[in-house]
Every structure is written in structure tokens, then in C-alpha cells.
Length: 315
Image (cartoon, rainbow, N blue to C red; front, top):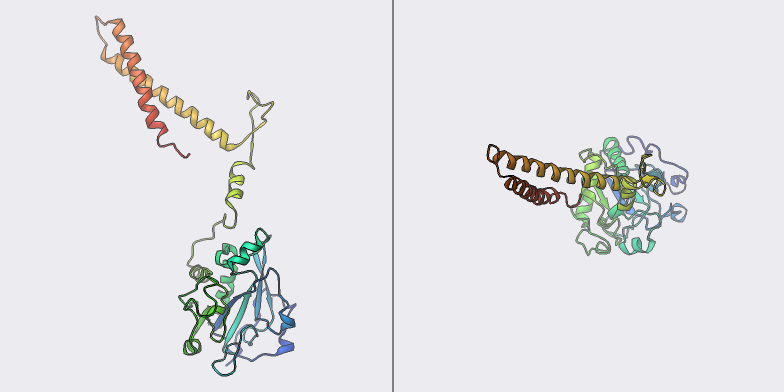
């Protein structure tokens, strides 16, 4: 029977709910189609005339997606082209999800540092949010957590250039998660090369725990480790007047240099004692002792310097 299970995704806003205006066909959904809006904010969809079932809008400060629901889960929405004849698209047991952002590398480059999601390189938190929705769709409506093997990058995904577009027969038989790029009678190539393997792994709960540093740039990580938590210089530090705080990086380097020097000195002293032990007894030539000790120290310093400094490169 159509329309079974919960029809509203938990936490989704219905501030832009268009079902009362456009109705839609009642279905029993077994397919989720992912789109990208190619914009940075919630579209108005022409007052709902081209709206999907749900839109996911990034909240970068909270590292979450804010969900807006426009039609019930088991109601046909309006984001796909449906040509006369052929197959049904919007009304073929499909729930459609628009992800705010872009799949176009040219658009990604043009937007530059402006906050946006380039979905082929989406941060883990964004993929995890989409995965949570798919997990819900699977648990509550039986949508399989599986999909096509081919997710070519845009613009190669436009039309049928990437070989990913389904035939009418494949579309009629399909169950699971796919992209706008896979739907017949359509030409759009979104969501491009989204990391579908990882997305499904997250939805199934088989992926590794999210990297707590995911989403941070290399410079931000460097600053967090080396620059933010400066350490106050000890009161007896010679340069405290001009350098009241030390960065951990410089302290580690100083400690490393001192440890290396002590290691070299200790090894030299040990070698000298070993040389003296060989000369123990009566009738020792003092000059020979001095010469042997000096030679042992010199040899040990050279040898240990190589042993100690070699592996330490890159520290």
C-alpha cells in the first residue's frame, strides 16, 4: 500500500512546503535521486514548480545540513524532466533530494573562498548528514543502500557522456540511490563525482569514525598545533624580555638539539673509558694514554653524530 511509514524527515523544516499547492502522486518510494542546486542558498524553485522532496542547506558554523521538506516522502515532486512517452520519472516511486552547492569544478573555482560545498570533495560532516538521511530512508521505507557503479565527474557526466545514464528498462527496474545524472529523459550531470562508496559506507555504519580534523585546512591544523598554544617562557630565560612566549615547535627543536649533543658526549666518554681500560696495568705510557683517549673521543663523536642525526631528519 502506498504512503506507508513516516512522511516527514525528522528535524526538517516545512516552512517551504509545496504539496498543498501542487499535490503530487501518492507512491511507495524505493528510489532516492540526488541533485545539486548549483547555488549557495535555498532555491525558491519557482514557488515550488520545480521543487524536490527535500533540500539540504549547509550550516558551516554548525557543520550540519539544515533540511527543508517540500513534499511528503511518498509524494512525487517536480525536479526531473518527464518527456511525453518513454518512462515516468518524477512519479516512478522516487524521492528527490537537492544538495545545496555545486558539482561543477569551474563553478567551484569561480566561487573561490566563498563558503560552499563542492560535492565531489564534500567534507566528512556533509557526507555524514546525507548518509543519515539515506539510513532513515532505508530503515523507514526500505530504500536499498546501493546504487550505480558509475559516478563520473562533471562535465563528463552531462548527457550520456560518462556512460552512466540508465536505459528505460534499467530505470524501471532500479531500486536504491542514484543521481540526476542516471535518470533517463534527463541531461543534467549532477551530483557529479560525489564519493558514493563512502556515502553508502557511512549510511551502513561500516565506515571509520569521522576524522575530527576533517574540513580543516593544512594551515589551520598547523596553527592549532604550533602557534595557538604558545608557552610562557620561564622566568630565568635569557630572552624573556624580548620573547616572553615560546612556540612548542621551537621548544621541541631546542630539546632535540640538546639531547643529540648529550648523546654524542656520553658516547664519546664511554669510548674513552673503554680505551683506558685496555691500557690498564703497570708501565703505562702516559703519552699513549692521552693519545688513545683523544682518538677514541674523536672517533666516537663522528660515529655517534651520524647515528643520531641521520634518523632525525624531518622531525
